[in-house]
Amino acid sequence: MAAKAVNLLLASLPQPYRDSLASRLKPISLPLKIVLYEPEETPKYAHFVTSGVASIVSNMADGSTAEVGIWGNEGLVESFHLLGQARVPNRCFVQMEGTALRMPYKELQAEFSQSEAMHHAVLQCVQSQGFILGQLAACNRLHDAEQRLARWLLMVRDRAGGDTFHLTQEFMATMLGARRTTVTQVAGTLQKHQLIRYSRGNITILDPKGLEKASCECYATVRNLYLNYYR
Amino acid sequence: MAAKAVNLLLASLPQPYRDSLASRLKPISLPLKIVLYEPEETPKYAHFVTSGVASIVSNMADGSTAEVGIWGNEGLVESFHLLGQARVPNRCFVQMEGTALRMPYKELQAEFSQSEAMHHAVLQCVQSQGFILGQLAACNRLHDAEQRLARWLLMVRDRAGGDTFHLTQEFMATMLGARRTTVTQVAGTLQKHQLIRYSRGNITILDPKGLEKASCECYATVRNLYLNYYR
DNA sequence: CTCCTTCTGTTCTCTACCGGACATAAAGAG
DNA sequence: CTCTTTATGTCCGGTAGAGAACAGAAGGAG
Image (cartoon, rainbow over all chains, first blue to last red; front, side, top):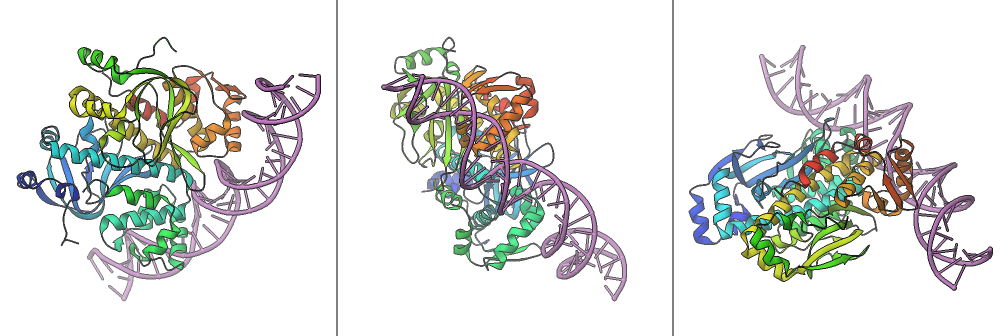
């Protein structure tokens, strides 16, 4: 996993420019649960994830939560911030520990407005994330917990680049916007069908193809969108 | 309604530039149900809504649907298209008849890349719509039909600029991603509480304040975001 | 006017999921 | 080892909403 610690947005930038950025990007580790940006605030740093996964989560006043975005090594976590003056209503934190390259947000803001290549790459990344979010908004409304869990596990798998991760059912419940007992139920079903295995937070995906069949069409739609822009 | 047929994004552009655009913008009417863009396709025209409301709807393979975006006179319907190469998975159509200013999409694309002012305005518009969508994605998961219907009616009201519209329960059901009978139920409750009145598709909002109390916090969040960028 | 379509109201069964409580079991700290 | 924390399993009543069927009511077309 540490082997291919590459960020795909950065990798898509043209050679000379990419190199000039490299010296200004600081490699950092992303410990579990660390917050990348807070709601309503201008971020201090911009993060290009190189491994691990970050989640954007919406917190309602009554304490209920749901995931409204997910970042792996395909993009820039703060990309939406760069577009304008609006305040993000959500928090973003590390869901699965990893690594990133970071830059002071103000500096990246300058790159975004000055570098054609960076600007273009960020917009492409925003577009993909936006379309994905649209699909997930509909999925949240129309599909049941088992399908959504399967879809979510596959999405995490794509971004984590592996089949084993540490995720408690409690945590998955907050991501899916469901009760923990509901996750226990549906995860039990998936395990019974030999699609996943888990114990005390250690989840292994045994049968990705089967899991995709158990998920809704949203996984395939999202899959086609999320690597869209690096080419 | 026809009196203030203004598009707020256009209105936010600096004077000389706005005038130079005017001659290239063709005023058109937006009849009910007309499609503004199809999934996976590059739009033929770009639309600045001046009155009425357009909806972006996600269609699942089983025929179920949910609204994943809404445009009134605050923005540019095809703004997300301008950002990159990805194909939108959704359709956009007119939910409430009105008017718009339109321009061939290719021409607007050129403006987007050449005019600093247009570029900036479109990005701001994308940002707002993106954050709104995040809120609605969570809302879809966490809040019940009555709250969502109240929230949705208020959102339509803000964008339509009036308190009376023609919307069948069947239609609202496809927007909310719910059964028609569920809409009948919750609309009945809202009417019983004197918040709305309706008959055969004609809805009147009687008590916006009360309706806001019946809705979830998402309405206020979205309200703060959607006019964000024109100032 | 009558016919027909559209829209709404209502009922009933069935299921997923909530919301809460409680039991068990594994991991880790000491 | 024991004690504590964390993660999971399970049960159970309650409810929102799906899903389907049907009745009535308003409007429009002829």
